[in-house]
Image 1 (tube, rainbow, N blue to C red):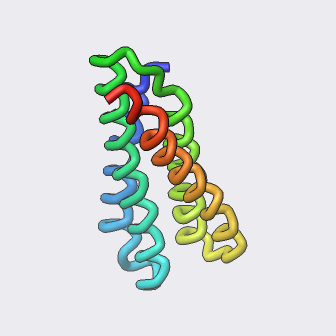
Image 2 (image 1 turned 90 degrees about the vertical axis):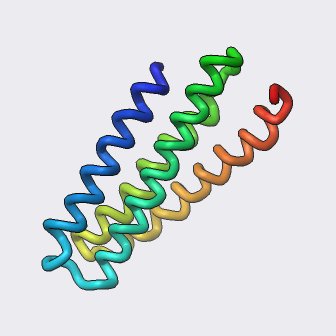
Length: 120
């Protein structure tokens, strides 16, 4: 997989969703649900940047980043995706998915600390 391309696409989508929330949803969602949306965008964009950093590190070092990268992509999909769905629908049980995304993020960060620290 081209992880640089993936990070670019995820960053693009994150900015678009942030703008959508700021301009289209601010008068349609409650302040609580708008905050949920913004939390999803924050974690989405932060981890798109982490994926870009991993990709660039792999390019210069030759490190295999597939495991870490996959966990960050899964984290974005589950964590941010569930928050977007919760904010748009108000269906509270969707919030039960969010911790699985958070766990994927934690595994990704742990993978960096354990696996990549050996190469640095």
